[in-house]
Image (tube, rainbow, N blue to C red):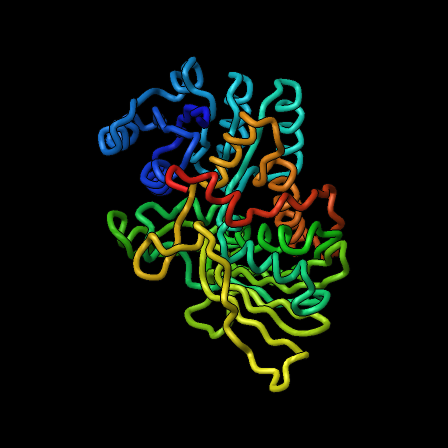
Length: 379
């Protein structure tokens, strides 16, 4: 029988609903309490999901909590995670993990000192589709990856998010908000990055919210909203990544990686599932064909007719890894390298230079179908 680790959620904003509603799908974790600086927000979530509502200090001090899930705003991630580690709790943070390499190094040192684990979203890259894409790349389906083109573009968060202001402040913007999905997937597919370059811009200094309850409110924009980056990987590939909230419409696909023997098209890494398409030079007609994927539990639609959402997979993998004494996948070193890449891109745009990475990481172990089933309450 799998040992269950008790989880407390710090921060009861929009994303907390996903964690609370999806946690019962998984084996080895149980969310028992929530906290927020706004007491009413914690009380509302607690009532909705039948868990305890605590103050932030109360959650940190609770003796029955093993892991704190940090769902606060990005600007608070470092301080909240630091306090959780100081309180003797393992930490799993929503992305972005931290806002600087320096913050991440401090947390890593503290975790080592305390004998604790750090994990971070995104865990969408554990989805069956992205793990199968890795399987195809690793077996040389399209040869050695030499280049690629990836992008996530829209007109921002103000049209749907109930409180979008923080997305446009320091620690926000499309690179630090949506970039983690793309950069994390690239690193788990190809390995660490050596250096980056980038250009950044900002279309407007303000945005007008069009979603309730703040419809009509004008909010400031204090971070780049259009970023065009180039990433040089240690294995030799050079990848272009665009993240922008200044685009109304486009025809670009999420991820296309070009190899010496073909091309692989990978779906949105903000989702666990999707369609993989491949063109192989070895085929007679060289047509792009849809790949038949393996039966992987973390790519089965469970969020509408065609969407797979298994957030808490990374948290569960960490909890089970703590019990088993093995490495976990969405770990602090991996997350810190992703932060190094993204902040390096922003610094490259600001300073007009190529930026060398300060960190590196290992590719974590693949998550095949059998390993994924072990994460689920009903494997």
